[in-house]
Each structure stands twice: as C-alpha cells, then as structure tokens.
Amino acid sequence: MTDVLHVVCPHCNTTNRVARVRLADGAKCGKCKQPLFNGRPVELTGTNFDRHVADSDIPVVVDFWAPWCGPCRMMAPAYEQAAARFEPRVRLAKLNTEAEPGIASRFGIRGIPTLILFEGGREVARQSGALDLSALLAWVESHA
Image (cartoon, rainbow, N blue to C red; front, side):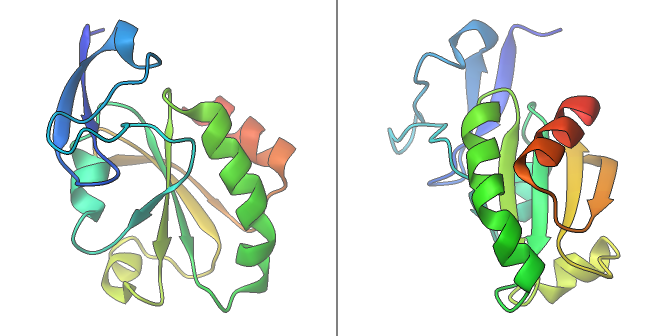
C-alpha cells in the first residue's frame, strides 16, 4: 500500500498527490486551493469522467442517472448522505446519462439508476436499480 495517493480535485479536475495519512485532514487542491473532499457527490461530464475514474487512487462509485428518472430522484438523498459518510475513503460521483449518452453507452448502461464501482480505472462492481441508504452503504462497503 503506497503512502501517497492521487486524488482528483472535484472543482478544477487537477490530480493531486496526497499523503494517505492526510486524506481526512482537510486536504486542499494544490492548484485551486479548494477542499479535495466536500462530502457531496462529484458531478461528472464527458470532459472530466476519465480523469476522475482513471487517475484517482481511491475507489470511485458512479451513479448513472437522468433527471426524468423517478427512482433516480428517489435515491438521490441517500446517495448524498452516503457521499458524506464515505469520503475520503471512497469518492461518490454522478453522471447524467441524458447529457452524456456516449459514456453511458460505453459502459453498457441499459437501465438507470446504475451504480458502478471503479478502482484504478477498471469496473469492479455494478448494481442496477434504486437503493435506500442502508442498502447503498452495505453495497459500497462490500465492494470497496
């Protein structure tokens, strides 16, 4: 296990090197000086998706969702709460499949919401369908 991790800034998408022991100590981005962790899911786009998923040394859970999706909207508050609980150990992020259909297609998203856990840029777990907070926490804990 390495003592220095690469963490992508949720504000400016810069990859930062952070000592593992300092992750929970309010680490800030070296470029924009904003906190690297704010306890909220990161909004992903076609521009920053690959950087956050592939360049981060911490696991990233991506919620593939759409604004018109009732189950997605129902799960959103639980996903927000989970982000606050898991950072800085696991980063939670969201990708609007309506705005980014190419990325959704690339990962074979056939139904939403779908959660994918990435480690080192590779998919390691997938869950389709809305989860309540306890089920979401259990799913992330069992796979991350």
